[in-house]
Length: 561
Image (tube, rainbow, N blue to C red; front, top):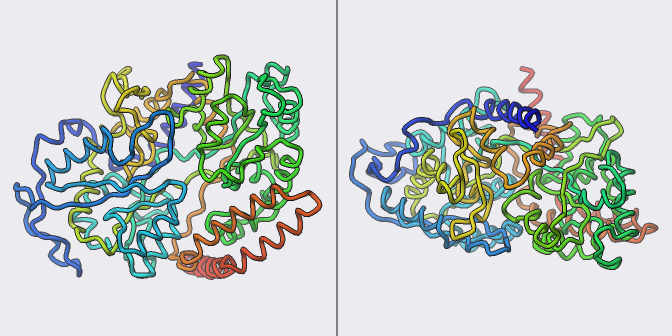
């Protein structure tokens, strides 16, 4: 176990030291942020970016108010209201004290964020600070004139954010804060979060079921398939033959079956082919992807996939099945089974005390690799809509949140309640009271960071490795499985516009296509898939591909000069 822990710590330290070598603070930054008054600019941002503020003064600015988007993940198990809980109260109190700004949180569904944000933006009622994982959505709002241009205010209003984000190692010569910069104008309309860990996805299975059947952990696609068949036919959990769900997912098939689907994609694709044809992060058009969907169709028609998956618009129903003890396997975030929220393994073991969920990595492609995607070091995008009447307050809030002492407290909470100190390193523990966190390390409140940062590169890995309420070996294995043969995100620094207007329709049509294709009769699969892809392409995908092809060629040409 110590050997494995050392292994993961070394890997984490390598990743985190690369991503976080610049910008983190130490020492006195753990002081109480309320002890000193914020030195505030004396005037609001200037539209032309000139004379952004006069000399700082010790007095607080005049009272103002802002609204801030927060994700509602629909979590169960007694989690708190994401807009009204201990942590929102803490933020409100501190921001009022230090910035003289009143904060109101506005919930947006994590699973329907595109539609809900579109409605809010169209109505001119979007929160003063919004966030999304969709760069295409941001591009659409930008092109429609719906966003505040932020580049004039970076150095004057966001120094702590800029310092924390540091350099962008994927694009040498740029700061991470410039990741979303328009390549032709230098304008910036949204700001990126920094991922401390790029592991993305893995496959989980009930090891106790395998043990009862005398089966080892699957190491190939065929062994995985055979295990699901055995689950269905032999009911090792004793839940009843009609209740067994060998594999569960949601209507977001491309995500919840991603490791399976990726294994069918041609591993010899060029960077250009993969990037150009990955429309709104969907890989439907990549050679081999269709055969991955055909494999899911086979599984479904043999009763190996939850027959209600197409009705699940978020994780709630799928999670409840896993917790109840009837599910044999699922695919999700690399650590999803072990997170305090939604508490899959914890709640499962309350119902089935001897239950075990472990990660596996069985889907081998034609090159002999278990290929899977890795996250980009830049994650969430957050922005200020043009309907915002308090840009000054929104900017101050973002920078306040970027200060180490503020995001650090939100990430780890109170000692003895949400973390314990072990050898000088905080290790997170699940809270059982009002201080429970609705998302891991409160990532939905600390919008500029995804992943744990304790202010010391050498300690970040140890903090993360010890911050799960499960055996450390499970975390080590899940991380190793998620990183094995991982494919780094492709970064092409060009400005794209075509996808924006089509993002919602292509997302909806894509989800419908995947669900319809998986549930089709085998003899009708090709027609369903081919007709659906033709419709998908005609509804904007071809236009997006054409733009990406042109932009990629221009980028390569400019790089050669």
